Amino acid sequence: MPRWKPGAVDRLQTAALELFDEQGFERTTVAEIVQRAGLTQRTFFNHFADKREVLFGLSSELQREIIGEIAAADAALPPLEVVMRALGAVADKLLEHRRAVVAHRYAVIAANPELMERELGKNAALTDAIAAALRERGGDADAAYLAASVAMLAEQVAFRAWTRPDETRALRDLLQDALHAVRTTVDAADRPLPA
Image 1: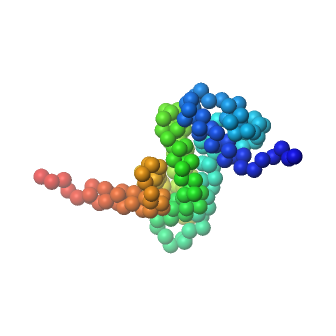
Image 2: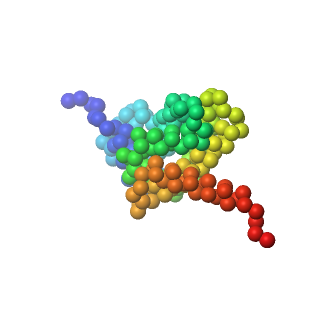
Image 3: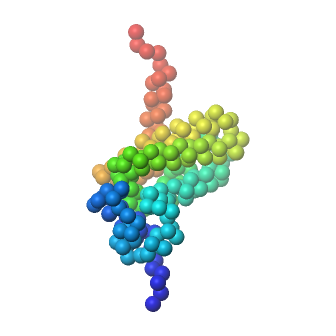
């Protein structure tokens, strides 16, 4: 009988999230995760560097996909539209079918300040990578960073809404709503203050 079992990453993530819920992130060990998943520690470490990576392992793939979408975008599109289209396409491709797991992951991260700090660091690194990809398309450095930052702000607002238990709209739609809210806020800021 073969020792390899399919779906190891999903099983490890599911086991880890269950244990993080039951006993907290800090008190959960890799040994407990692999035991719950019915796998070995070697299998765990073939996929993840440590237990934090169970929560952050998708980050690299997301970044690669987003940067790829930006590079392939129509050169005539404005930078912010390029990034928002890239975020929507990657949300459809990598996140929408994993909604329950991603929402569960976010709840675990939000409950742990150390993990939240790491999440914010990953978001900052993604913002920088997006800005670099926009610069490679020939964009101005300041405009590229501004577009990347605005898009990531809209993404964070949309993501928070998307991970709520009662939310049913697609992340792509929530991204557009969040961008509209940003534009409305900026437009309102351009008006003179009432006397």
